[in-house]
Amino acid sequence: GTRAQGRHAPDLTHVASRSRIGAGILPHNAGTRAAWIVNPQAIKPGVNMPPHGFSAEDLNAINAYLATLK
Image 1 (cartoon, one colour):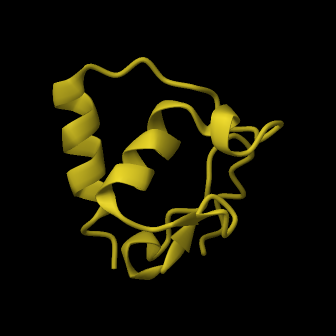
Image 2 (cartoon, helix red, strand yellow):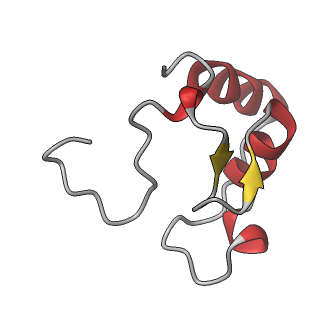
Image 3 (cartoon, one colour):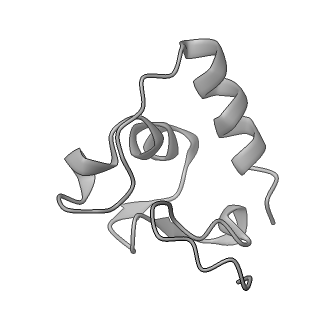
């Protein structure tokens, strides 16, 4: 949705208004969003987004932020 042309992360433009995430693989809710943030490779092998080892507090904050991107 921007001119940034990112190559290693998903397009988060209006992500909270989407009904599915992970290229349409997952229904979009807080639980699946958290799983996708932590280990996108488990959901979509070969995706450019690397796995992350966020603390529970950071994961909750990121998840809550993404829920605001309508």
